[in-house]
Image 1: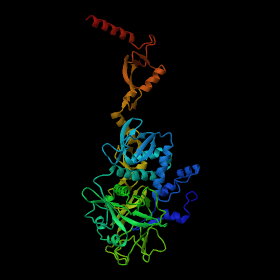
Image 2: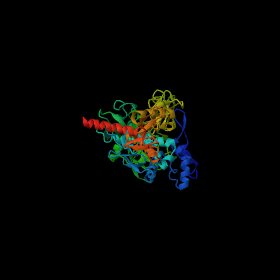
Image 3: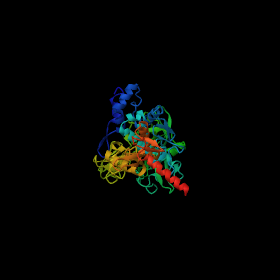
Length: 537
């Protein structure tokens, strides 16, 4: 505890304590952050350098920003990583990869992949965005210290979504709206697909119109349907009296985090917000706000004016859920002054309900009640998901568990689904495999189709210029056989006088009585006679 500066056990418990969900299950908060702080390799590094900045982290927003800043700084100062990789305005460093003028954007506009140059091969490739960022992180000294769950979260969750959002760009198909049409963003007839919100079609939007100062913020696609939405609180006050415009937790079609980030980006570009609720892990935490530069606001105590009578309609609150009835204030932190909890599906402060969800289970991933949930894993964290809505999860036979698709890969050889942490990545094919046997089999097939074989070395070479020819003496047959050989091997043989060159041909054995290749004199005489005959004719 001395290294982490939690200011006592109570602060630690607030960050990582056990939390009981609506379905009765108990989970530990901020498990990814806890894995980061418990990492012995990281602790050892911080002690050796007397720098504990990477251990003084108390929320997911800080984890994302501080760790990625440290990764970038680590790469910048490493002479073993000389090549620049420019992605979304940031520069990473690598020993194997670099970007060209496209800065990672694929020519075919593949939003899931990054275009890069493989320096060793001097060729352009593309790689899945999360996989590419994972490679960049793990090349750095800091990246090698990170726990697997943190690397998976940063690369497979955070960067993948950021990259998809970035390549989406300023799509003309997506239009931003900021207005008072709260009814539209909670009406399934105007929303595209399932938003996974318990307030859809519940007619609870009078709360935002009458009780608080807020706007509906949403984007629509080319058909005019809402694909991402949120509530923008326009008059928020912190403990120092500063004013903020804060975007509440975002919801989107199919729970697509990319669409949530696109909504945030458009609001930032239009200067409509000063901060927003983070996307992804811990977004349900009441204090999980960041400013528009990604800096954590978890230490800020926010409040809003909230005018509610006991019979007034409520709408479920993610952040400002502690309500003081006498002061007409709602807070994003628990305090001794609050009278009611607003993180409820009750109709009003009396506790009236129009749907009894007490006997139904809560889906942590899609954020709704359902009949039955089952244990699944995302970024190494256990969550409970509707058994009838597991499309984003993959069954890992070796674990006997469901894991989120971003945490998994499919063996390119046998098709087995495996966790990314357990997979082997081939430097030849740049694909993932479940075991050494599958990887070797795939590499051999890839080399057979794309590389060049040296018969002498029994080796494959990627570039045809690495292969040349040599004459190998076949003693039983009494002839030379012309075979392929690696150019480096040939140079070594010549240098060590284990092979000899005559008239631009190389021989591995020569006649000791003549110091010439076997039959060489006869061959030259025959060739000379043919030349005389051809001249006479």
